[in-house]
Structure formats: structure tokens, C-alpha cells
Length: 446
Image (cartoon, rainbow, N blue to C red):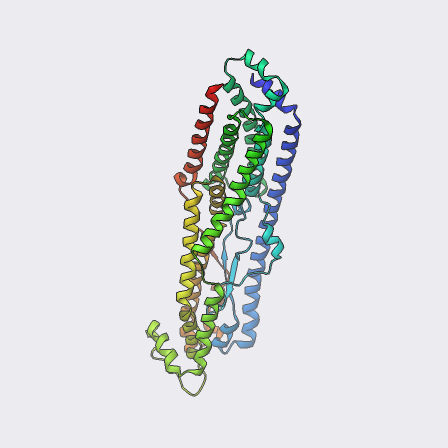
């Protein structure tokens, strides 16, 4: 039976079209991911060279004044990329891979990023994750919407019904042939991605693969459930396409609109303006006002004198620090609200397999917003350690020779790629089982 079903399926036009479409777009998605990794490698290499050369050049001009030298020098923190990010690029095309900061106020530098073509950002990237989430369900719909209705409309269903006692089993076998075909393409593309993108087959890679399998099973169960109503081909096709639009486009848009309006996040520009105002207004105030706040945080520097009638580096960097303190509350509010948005979205996504797959892919690839916020938190600690490491030398009027610049090459931050297997796989599995059971109950009337 299966041999005949496979032969029959392989001779159909939809088989050739689906095979060509999935392989072509899948390979394109993998190659786009490869370009993304190459761009990352070039950016990291350029940043490392720039920092080394920048330090050398600036030392030539400002070696005697460490405070002035550090006014100009930038130090780079790089989010160490993993090749698995090429499968699901996520939000990493708008969030910077690295940050180069001075020891001055951080809030004015935290949200610096590269200029990108807004039309390209709006359309997003055609990565392999996009192909799996959006294209694979469409192919499944095209191959399964007429499992029953085709036989009925061609007049062959009566003959088949007379030759087999298990009519529902026959439909299931036809569905299984198509599911196995899609799984075959998925396995090929994942192996190809692992080879071309040089992705190690670690826990995150297998998690993406297993989630993809469950995601395809969900759509297979959904298609079988629609077929189980024994409607005509037009009804099945229209219903399944409508469900695809709702689950992949409409519902995610509604959820996004809900979380944006319910948990309104202050603009990052607000924190930047507060930081700048907090710094610039100090120029017109008595120096004691600045120093009291700065010394309150760093009492070890109370021994340094701050002349009221002339410029001093301790006062200048104290102003920079107080500027960040002025924006601290708004900056923390931004982080808290974004985290709350993400939490609510993840909770809703547990009931929406398309959203759950997209958010999970990004999390497993380290390209989600939470990963970026973790990077910004690491950047704040990086900046803090830089400042505190240089303060005493600056205030003591040391020269550039007092610093071992070899220890100040570009640094890397490693993301935490841990995840919960239960939370990752259970929602899609349960939804698939529930819908499959509903389809089985409908087909009992056959």
C-alpha cells in the first residue's frame, strides 16, 4: 500500500513543485545566514584592529595626560557570536553585535548602532527559521487540503471505499506519505545548514530540529483535522489558508499591538536626554554638588582636591558619572518594561505554535531581545570596570605609560544559551495531540 501511495505522490505535479520550492528557498535561507556570519566576522576583525590602532595613535598625541587620552579612547565589548544564529537571525540585524564605549557617560553610547536600510529591516531576513515557520506549512496545506475531496471529486472514492475496510486509515496513510516527504526535506536542509554554516550539533541545534519536527506535526494534524470534516477542496483550501494567515500574521500582530500599548516603554532617547541634561547642567553648578554625589558612590576618592576655579579631571568624570545616575531610573524602567513585554508574549505564545516557534528559534539562536538586554547589562559592568580601573590613575595625573595597554584589547561576552526542554517542546506536542484526536473523532463516521 505505502509503495503505491509513494509512487502516486511522486508522480504528481505538487510533489515536484514542493520539492523545488522548499529546496530552493531553504538553500537561499542558508546562504543568507552564511552572508550574515561572514559580515559578523568582518565586523569583529575590523573592531579589534581599530581598537589596537586607535590606542597607539592617540597615545602618540596625548601620552602625558591620561585623562585627555581616555576622553577619546573607545573600548570594545563584543557579543561572541555562535554560528547557530544564522538559522534564526531574529533581532540581531537591528541590535548591535558589539559596542565601543569611552569611560564617559554610558547612556549616551548604549544605543549606538550601525545605519541600516529601513526597507530591508522592515522586510526582515529570509533565514532558514523563516522558511520553516512560514513556507513549510503552506507546502503542507497545498499537499493535503484535498486528501479526501480529490478522490470524491474524481469519482474514485467509491471504488477505494469498496476495496478497503479502513477508510480513515487510508487517508492517514496518504497524509503520512506527505509528512515523511516534508520531514525528508527538513532533515536535508538541517544537515546542509550544519555543514555550510559549521554549526556544532549541540543541544541548541537538536532543540531547533525537534521543535521544527513538532511544528510540522502541528500543521499536519491541523490539515488532517480540516480534511476530517469531509468538505470539498475549495472549502478546505480557503479554511487552511485563512488559519495560516491568522496564526502567522494576524494573531502575532495583535499580540504585538497589545503588549506595546499595555506595557509602554519609555524611549531610549529619554534616558539619553536625561543623561546629557544631568551632565551639562553640572557646568553651571557649584562643583561641590557634583562631587558630593560622586564621592558618595566612591568614598575612596575623597582625598583628591577639587579646585573651584579651574578644570580638574575628577570633577569632569564625576559629572559624567552623575549624568548616568540622572538617567538610571528611566534606563531601568526601559529594561523592566521590555522584559515584561517579552514575558507576556512568551506566555501567550504557549497557545500559538507559530509564535512559540519563532520566539523559541530566536532564543535558541541567541538573537532575541532578552539576549540583547543581557549584553547591555554586561556592557554596563564592562564600562563600570573600565571606569574604576582608570579613575585612580587619572586623578593621580599619571601618564599613558602607567597603563598596560596590552590588557585592553577588545573583549568578548558569552551569552547564556540554556533553555528548558519541557517549556520548549510540550506546547507544540500537546496542541498536535489534541488536534489529531479531534480529527480522529471526526473520521469515525467514515
